[in-house]
Amino acid sequence: MFFFGISFLKKLHFNPLNIAWYFLNPLVIIEGIGNLHGESFMCCFILIGLFFLIQKRCFIGGLFMGISVAIKLLPLLIIPIFYKYLDWRKFSLFCLGIGLSSVFFWVSFWEGNMANHYKNTIDLWFTTFEFNGSLYNILRAIGYELKGYNIIRKLGQVTPFIVIGLVGIFTFLRSNRTAESLIKSILFLLSCYFFISTTVHPWYIINLLFFGILSGYAYPLVWSLTVFWSYSVYGNSGFEVNTTIQFFEYLLVYGVLFYELVRVPLGEHFQKPHLFDT
Image (spheres, helix red, strand yellow):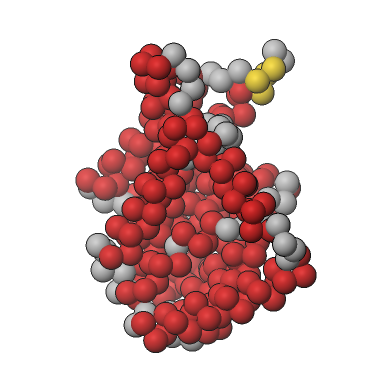
């Protein structure tokens, strides 16, 4: 991933040593390497897939993208975004590669109830689990005031349609004709997805950090640091959410995001880590 990352940053006209902001990030070191969460491996194969895609080697790119899907289902969200970057023939080859790769890795695990198990898992994800949400927590608080109970199940029935709508917006309403615009669309789609999610575990932000470095946006880097504050819920008295800490976590993230959208991406001012001056 290190060497593919350097090559990709060069193609996007960024300092290739910016890849160190990923590998030296505490979140990647602790959660990606120390705790072996799958996001780091998933990002690795997405990067290799992107590397082949920008060279228009669509089938091979699809094979590596399929490996990332086998690790985590999240890349399924970003696949439609490649439609404009590739023409429909190349996009078909890309999807064929994803399909063949997915079948290869999933066939040994397939059994009759597997599709139903995945459906139940997705239902639990949207309607039951909750941890460190941002916009969701605001809506939940409003729900308590108006209804007197947690409205996660009602919100969870609507959220999948919002996600589908977001995928459609970033697929058809953005140009996505260049590698730069493609990476930005992926970053913003995944950001919106996590902004509305009921559950945002710290290691999920590794995905945004990865695409933030490739696109020059700094708010994922800020989020990768403030997300550690979410662990404050695990105290001596048990699981207890500290809304003040959570407020400041997202205040910094949304503040930097708003500045970058209005002014200029701060990632353009990244300096290479001093480690490389020795």
